Amino acid sequence: MKVLLINPPYPFEESPTPPFGLISLAAYLLREGVEVIIEDYIIQPYSRERVKKVLADFKPDVVGATAVTMNVKKALAILKDYKEINPGLVSVMGGPHVTFDAENMLAMGFIDFIVRGEGEITFTELLNTLDAKKSPEKVAGISWRENGAARHNEDRPLIPDINVLPYPARHLVALAKYRALGFPINMITSRGCPHNCIFCVGRRMVGSKVRYYDVNRVVDEFELLSKMGFHQINVVDDLFTANKKRCLAICDEIINRGIKHVWGAFARVDTVSEDLLAKLREANCTTLCFGIESGNQEILDRVKKKTTLEKCRKAAEMCKAANIDPMTSYILGLPGETAETVEKTLEFAKQLSQNYGFHILAPFPGTEVREKAAEYGMKVLSDDWDLYDANQSVCHAGGISPEEIDRIVSEFNSSIHRYVENIAPRKARGEVLSEKDDQILKSIDTFVFNRDIILKELVEAYPGVKNGASRDEVMKDFTAYLNEKTGKPADFVQGELRRLVSLKCIDVESMPAGSTVKWS
Image (cartoon, rainbow, N blue to C red; front, side, top):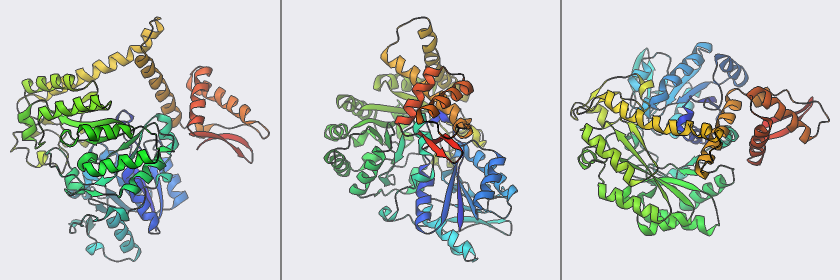
C-alpha cells in the first residue's frame, strides 16, 4: 500500500513549522510497512501540473490530507484535484476540523473517508482493511461514504500509552527550507488537556487525561532536534507544565546532558512557580506562552478558563524575575464582550508583558462556544472557513459589534506593521537604529529573500556549471544567478548563502553533467 500525505498551504505570517501531525502519522505508517511520501505545500508551490507529476512518479493508492479550519478549503480543493486527475485514488482527510464536521466534508462527494481524532491506529487499520478488500464497517474512528450516504463508525478509544508511537518521520519533509526561513521546530512531550475552555477543541481531540512520553524519550528527541540547526525548539503540548514533577525531571535531564539550546513551551498561569521557572530557565527555556484571553474576570469565568487576573499578573512577574519572556495572547469577541471589556483587556495586556498579541474569536467546529452559541448570547455569522483565521470576526459577541472588534484588532496590527515598515526608511535617512530595530530589519530581509527562493524554486531551477568547477566557483556562479533572479545586491546574496551553508540548508552537489546547488 502506497500513501501520499498532503500538508495544505498555510500563511507564512503564522510562522508554520514542519507538519507535526503528518510526520507523526507517517512514522507510524512506515513502521507498519506502508510506503509513504509527504507533499508539503507550505514550502512547495502547488499546481495541478505538480499533482500529475507526483501521481505519475509515486503512483499512490491512497491520498490523505490534514487541515485546520482556516485551511480546510484549500485542502479540499487540492484533494479534489487529485481525485479528478486519478479517480481511482482513495481520498482520506483527518485533523480537528473534519473530525467535528465529517457530515459536511463527506457531502462534498470526493472524500471517501474521514479519520476522526487520533489518526495513527485508525488510519493504519483502514489501510489494512482496504488492502484486504474488506468492508470498513468495523474500523472504529472513521466516517465514510457508502452508496452515497454518510456513515459514522463508533469512536476509537485514545491510545493509552503513547510511548508505543515512534519518533516523527521528519526526514519526509524539507527541513532545510523551514530552517532557511528562520522558523522553529516543534515537538510534543504529552497528549491531552485537563481543561475545558469553551473556545478550544483540544480536549475533545486528545482527551482530558494527559498521557505522557517517558522523560528519557522526551530528552532523547530534544537532543536530536538540538543538532538540526533550528534556532528554537517549541514544545507544543496543550499544557507542558501540567505536571510540575515531570517538568522538573525533563529540565534536570536536559541540564545533566549538557544540552544548550533555546526552547519555549505553552503554559497556564496557575501551573508555574518560582522554583519551576528557575529550573526551566536553567535548562535554556527562554519563552513561555500563556493564553490569558481576557482582562475581564467575568469573561474568564464565562469561558471556563478557571484562572484569575491576579494569577496572570503573578505568573508574568515570576517569569520576568526568572528571565523568561512571558508571551501572552488574548481573544477579543468572547461571550459577554463589550467596548468596556475590550478596553480593560487592551490595558491589561500592556501591563502584563511587552510581548503580546490579539486574536478574534473563531468558533471552530467542535467547540462549545459554537455548539451553544445561542446560550452564550452569540450569533455565528459565517461558515466560510477561509474567514476563520482568528484575525476577523465571524460571529457577534452580543455586546459589541463585529465591525468594532475588527477595527480594534486591525488598528493594533497595523500599528506594528507601520513601525516595522518604517525601519528601513529610517535607516535610509541615516538614522542610527537600535540593536533591536537593526535585528528586525535584518530578519525581514532574510525572510523575504529565502521565501522568494523557496516559492519561486530558484535553487531547483539553477542550471549549475560544467564539470571541473571548484566549490568556490560554483558558489560564485550561484551568487550571480540569485543576484540576477532576486535583484538583491551581490554582497547581500553572499551573506545569505554563507548563512544557508552554515545552517546546512544548501550544499554543492556533483552531478554527471556538472556541479549544482541543492537543498540539503
